[in-house]
Length: 256
Image 1 (cartoon, rainbow, N blue to C red):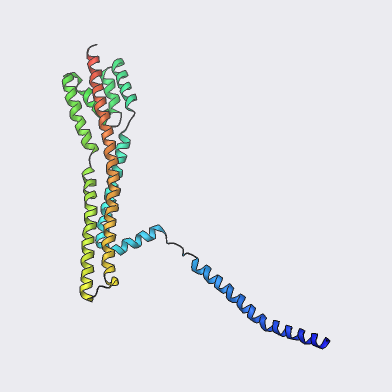
Image 2: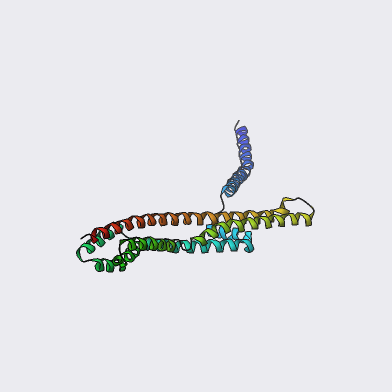
């Protein structure tokens, strides 16, 4: 009986010894599979936005992407200059009119004229021109206000024609690049005598990149263009309103 127990224990120990390496190998294989799965599911780090944009810009080709970029840069430069001009030209219209009326009633036309000359903005310039012609009569004042109002509006709209040109030119250049890219794709098909996607991919990529660059440039400039127009319209309304107030003030002053 004891001999049988010893024999059974020896057999069990031998079987366990044989299975141990197999279990270790299985565990090692499982760990390797998990590590491989984690490596596969791990997403690669994305490239910076400016690097991606530069890459796409170069893929579109300098010949067509550069003119569109120049249109965008020049249009933005003019837009920023116009926005700064309009911002610095704005004043507190209500306080300005009240001050002019106060000086006109207390110290006369010369004091009001001096105050207008030292104040920035188109409204102050219009008031100065109107007060300059007060001695010629109210009719001359009205003509001066209307004429100089048109001059000031023209100065505010200076440069807008260039922005409008760049808005129209950017997508046009992009579409020209599109046509050139498609022609290039068909030339590649003709040379290779096959319709493989790899043959036409380069030309089609150029076509699409130049198109989207032109559209992006036009959209950006259009937003700035409309914003500048809205500021000009607001300023013109203020100019017309305050011009009427000036004529009324001088009419009341002349009756004293």
